Image (tube, rainbow, N blue to C red):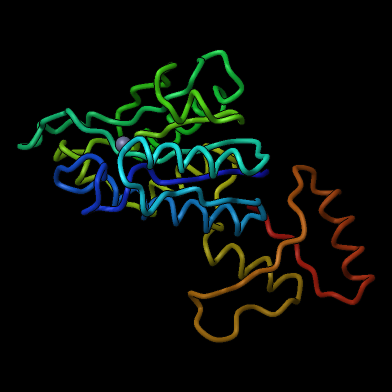
Length: 241
Ligand SMILES: [Zn+2]
């Protein structure tokens, strides 16, 4: 896939820097955005970072973001935001939760938007669902199917306690791609590697770098690729994920 990703708003301390609560929208959206981009690229997707770091006003930030988005031909435009307005400063034991805005709930972005909502809510955030919004400049003016993710609320103590930038990013990536970037448990992989006679990690066990060639839902297709690689002189193992 080719995907545009950006964090909403200017950086903190500049005009139009977004919602502020227990955490600051602008800063957290950038953390999540960076991790989403890293993971998508790791999976082999082409990703453009369309974040604006130097807008002079809200209108300027938005027009710079949309111009950057529309400079690339992509399958999806993704805008990462945090919500405000919950006002649950004491914490009532319930999150206010996550929602994803799309221009049109019958549009091309709908399936991925619904998956992102479901994926984030599986972390424990209330699923507020997808919402149509035809007035937001980003949704109105971008050319590709677009979604604006409101990860969770910056002014709800429960949301903020549950929130973790890395997990949020993983959930978004899973929603967009249907794939998890994290690999199965180490033991499983080591066992598979051992039975195939391949070498396991050298060095720090926590850091194993794999080179992936393909992912197949049918084992025989994986085996066929393994054969081709072995014929080419590569040690290839099949790992079930
Ligand atoms: Zn925002």
